[in-house]
Length: 100
Image 1 (cartoon, rainbow, N blue to C red):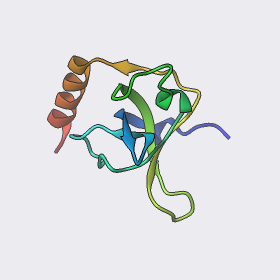
Image 2: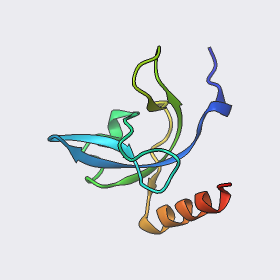
Image 3: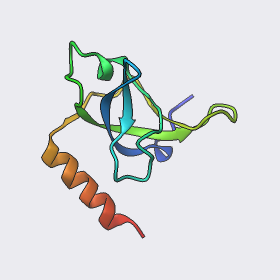
Image 4: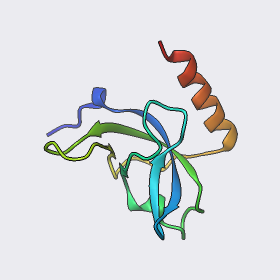
């Protein structure tokens, strides 16, 4: 089955330490809550590859897997795209201008 590219949108996420575990969550200031879980490649939460607090740009879609708790899903095969603080600010600024 092919991936429906229209269901995916760009989301800025960051690695955070939650209950002693590195988790990936959306950056505040977007359509998604910063508390929403993100299922993505384990590479993003690997502290050997990326420092804690690193921000990434993902293509993700909102899903709930058979009526469960909603979460963002990003395909694990996509490239890791780290973002600088300036890129995050620019991305969030464009998002705010695009809102209705």
